[in-house]
Length: 305
Image (cartoon, rainbow, N blue to C red; front, top):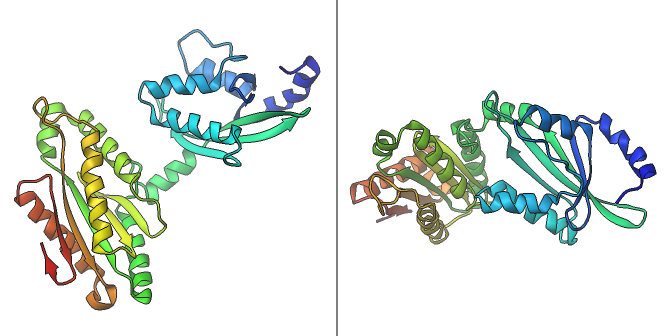
């Protein structure tokens, strides 16, 4: 615990516009600044929390148990910094109110004070940054790449693979019977479905040569640079599995939401037309949907399945 003198020194943090919090290695909150408490008082009808000695990690754990993926990642990231497994941790997360949509970035930064280890949690409002991204390259509903981001990335990655002689793959995913889902459960649940599917599929790729975007409506697309048919097919298997783990009921009990997948893999130096890659993937998506849905159909160079 900080002494009175220490707290007088720390009070300079009250002039910062960011929401600031200091915790110890156990996750106990030792200090929050005025911006933090002002935000709470203006955004809740509940009795205000006396934050000192509240365990920040325990609060995150409880939210994670209720299904909040951001809280789970936050707790994991902070613990990684506390355990010196990584230098710092940051995460972007939504914090919407009934009146407006807001996004924040959390930074966890370790520091030493009087030979004790502490951790500064800095919550910064990045709403303007996110809104700017949404207007340019991010789909406003799902917060994954939009059609513009897809087109820019495909052009760049196509040229790179053409120079290197590497194959490039495109995967187009369509949510099966989505119109029926909307008609049955309503557009609010339809939007939630799109958000959940997009987030779980986004997590399947992390390389700089890959991108996942919303292609339009209930369709999503991957571009995978330097990716042959075997690697792309493994991702298709993960796509079907990941969607199944969401356990989204569709129409009837035990009838879960599924997706159909079309895959195409070509060599740019042979194909010479990036639009043809997308046309191939789209045509094999049509084959998947025509053959019973919840399956993958694919094209590999001159081989068709």
